[in-house]
Every structure is written in structure tokens, then in C-alpha cells.
Amino acid sequence: MFQVSPFNRDFFNLEIPPLQCKESAFAIEDLPGLWRLHWQLGQTTIFSTFYTRIDQACLLWGIISGVIFLTAQFAAIDWATQAVFWSGLTLLGTGAMVKLSENCALAEPLNQIVSAWVFLMLSGLVLTDLSIFLGWAPILMQLPLLWLLLNAFGYLYTGLKMRSRAFLLICLVHLLAIVTLPYTSIWQFLETGLVIGLSSMLLAVLQWDSSGVCATHHN
Image (cartoon, rainbow, N blue to C red):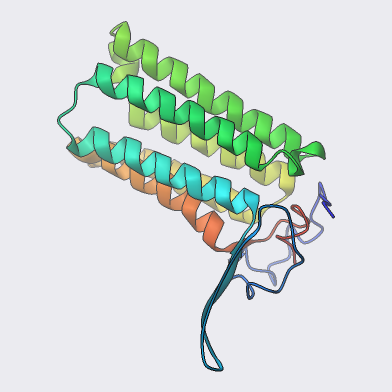
């Protein structure tokens, strides 16, 4: 049931869009943990889609990223308190990501990709907490840059491993966000949260061009 293709032959085929709308909720076979959403009024389909476990992991990270960075931007909560709460939330999110992708990650290259993302998230978490609790000003003042870089590297690695232009484009979006950070002044956390969060949720909602991810995302 679970088939992962390490290379997509259509990597440079411009006839296949990097991102496109998913087919209907019933266009794929049943998979463990699959969510199907199908709203129909009479003979008219209003909304029909599906979310695999990989999609669910993307949705989860999108929500977590948005909550963390928007709170940092707008809430009057001291950094130490935020660090404690967000560290716990990040660890829970990382564990959930591993759990949701465990069946797919049994095959190459998904296991390497999941391991890379776990390493990146935990590295970012450690650097963030140390900068807050030990007063490492150079890192503390560049937290948006740090997390955009970590995510950009993760998407670059994923795109190359899965031969997916969609992930490479998302990487480019993060790099462009890094370039514009100096111009957003006091709104850097807002920009970072929107870019990271919406990018992850976009990958959950749309179908991307890499083939054979748990026998779902393929062309």
C-alpha cells in the first residue's frame, strides 16, 4: 500500500505544475489515518478533498508556526515564559510529525527527510532557548532570520531528495522573505509566522509534484 519513489522523472517537466488542486476526496485508495472531506448538496459537490498523514503533519506545523510567531509579535508575554510554552509545543509537534509520517518514513527518501526536519527543528529550538535564557543577543535579535533559514534549508533538502519543484519554490519564498526582513522593521515575527505557517498549510491543501508519497501525491 505504501510506495515511495525516490525520484520523480517529471522533475523538469514544465507540463506538470508544481502545485495544483487535489482531486475529489474519493480519488485515492483508503490509507491509514486518511481524512476525507466531502460536502455535497443534492447532485452538486460543494467541496471535496483529502488529507493524508503527511498533509496533516503540514497542517499541524502551519498552525504551530502561526501561533508561536504571531504570539511573539502581538502578545505582551515575557520571552522566558514564551520559551517554555513554545518549547513544549514544538516538541509535541515534532513528535506528532514523526508519528504521522512513521509508515511513509520506512522507505527512502522519506526517512531521511523526516530525520532532517527533526534535526532542524530541535536545533532551532535549542538555539532559541539558549539565546533567551543565556542572553545571547546576536541570536536573540535574529530569531526570525534563524527560523526562516532553517525552514528554507529543510525545503531545499526535501525538494532535492524528492525531486519536487513545489518544495524548491517554497524554499525560494523563504529566501525572499529573508531578503525582505530588514524592511519589515518591527513586524519581522509577523512576516516569519505568515511565511512559515502559510507555506506549510499550502502544501497540505494542494497536491504537489513529487510522486509516490504514500501512494497519494503523484501525477
